[in-house]
Image 1 (spheres, helix red, strand yellow):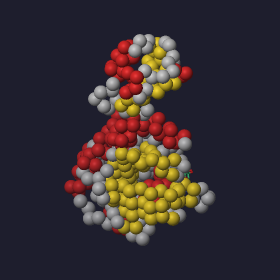
Image 2 (tube, rainbow, N blue to C red):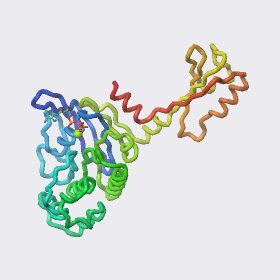
Image 3 (tube, rainbow, N blue to C red):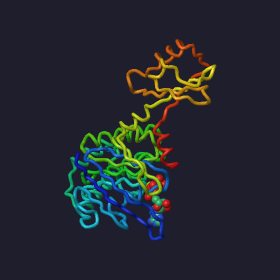
Image 4 (cartoon, helix red, strand yellow):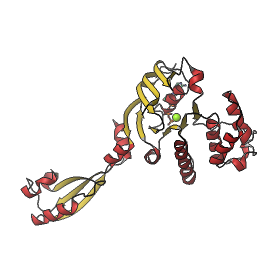
Length: 306
Ligand SMILES: Nc1ncnc2c1ncn2[C@@H]1O[C@H](COP(=O)(O)OP(=O)(O)OP(=O)(O)O)[C@@H](O)[C@H]1O
Ligand SMILES: [Mg+2]
């Protein structure tokens, strides 16, 4: 896939001397949903602000659709839509005029069919003549998305799209994001909700203290998450693994009182039934068994912890 955004050796040090981003290099592929995961203050909004041309980087190169964001801001901004983290919109405007205004800012000729399409997609069409101040918080967020889409961008940035919204609206948002992807929009979202990344993203990037520590395909992460361990506590501890059990690659722990078996829940056969059978054939008496799974959350905590 061709990258639509490419970021090379990006650094941002704020005037205060604070290093918000250090040596970020990242490509975003056309048509993908990329989730940027990280704790408060990690640098997510800073990174988005640089790509969208709101903040100037200290050094490094960012290209959007092959244009440099600093040298060609008009070309890059015209293909980008941003749904900011903070909700700030004109309270006394109506939904439709606010979205029309956003489109106008980009110098695009008005296109009422297109605006009708996005307002319908966001379930805002019936509210098009309602003043923004009269909308619920969730509807306001939808208006922000409509405004960000008003000029038909190729790339949409969503900075914490579901922070502080209820479960139902979160699911709605996920549906909206998925259908935007189906329409060919590339999506970059930031979140600290791991399940959001798990549900939506094609790729996940972990950012912490201004550095990206891991970028991975979600499927591969799920492979990792599928890894489980079975801890088998036995009555009489053993020193060596009997020959008949060697094929299971068991680890001995707890001074021989526990055997640990690693398996993958995503595989057709986990091997657990055969293992338990073979243990019994070896006259190994089980005291207790326990399973453990590494989740995306464990991976996240592990990375952030480091
Ligand atoms: N204008 C600024 N001047 C100085 N420091 C700033 C400025 N903007 C952000 N920072 C600092 O940069 C760091 C990264 O902030 P940023 O807003 O990018 O984090 P974030 O990952 O978006 O966090 P959150 O999850 O809370 O939104 C923080 O420590 C923040 O205090
Ligand atoms: Mg932020």
